Image (cartoon, rainbow, N blue to C red; front, side, top):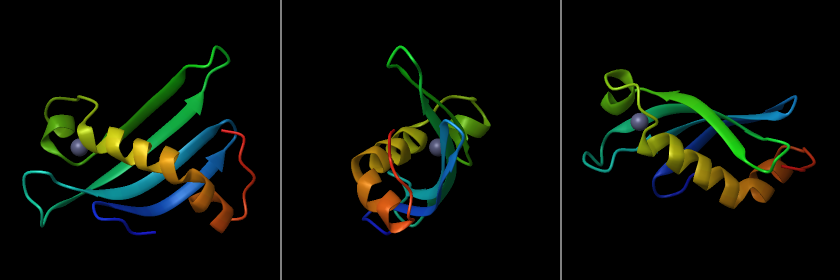
Length: 93
Ligand SMILES: [Zn+2]
């Protein structure tokens, strides 16, 4: 699935986690796409835990959760029914 600034390369359910790999367009350099991988899971108390990595400077130099990770996660959550039904999963995220 391709949107204006997110491309999903892989969406996988691994145990209680979702593993999402994709590319997110840079906001400052529109011709640059960052490779992003995030893993998200819903905890018993209702909180969502997210970890991941990205090839942008904020992450590689600052080890910060960057905008690209958040954007990929957000795009997944908004589109998960479409993404996941295309892959034949059932969803209880
Ligand atoms: Zn990033």
